[in-house]
Length: 184
Image (cartoon, rainbow, N blue to C red; front, side, top):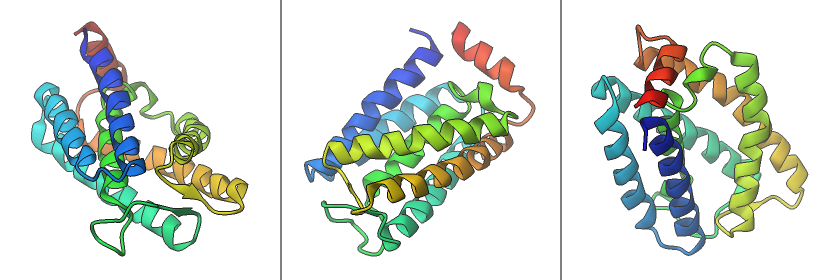
């Protein structure tokens, strides 16, 4: 299986582990899944230090964004958080895990900021909606409003995250990175 396929499959397995861990109040699922996906990702990364910095930056960005959504009443988490005033760790882990896609399976989006914003606008809320259906989080009583706010969050987040990824992957074009991942 090539790097591209490993990246996509690993993220989806990781996503379910984090979300179901949040839904089932199994706090250890997220750190275990995160350790595995980060280890596999960094094993294949060309510049491990820069890629690690990208993961940390995306985790911090996502934690801030989802904590704001939590305080705004757009989302709530039934399982307790390790730090009461932040979104749960499994949400931070999801942002870090998502960052493993940016320079591999999502590298083709680099420089296509409108398309990235468009995809984020639709895919972001779908992920949160799926998480809510699995019981990991709940949307506000006006779920449509929550999903609309999440759509805006992800429409803004995707281009920013891709810019961070491009900085971490200096000197390589998106098409060369994607072609390399597909070939390996």
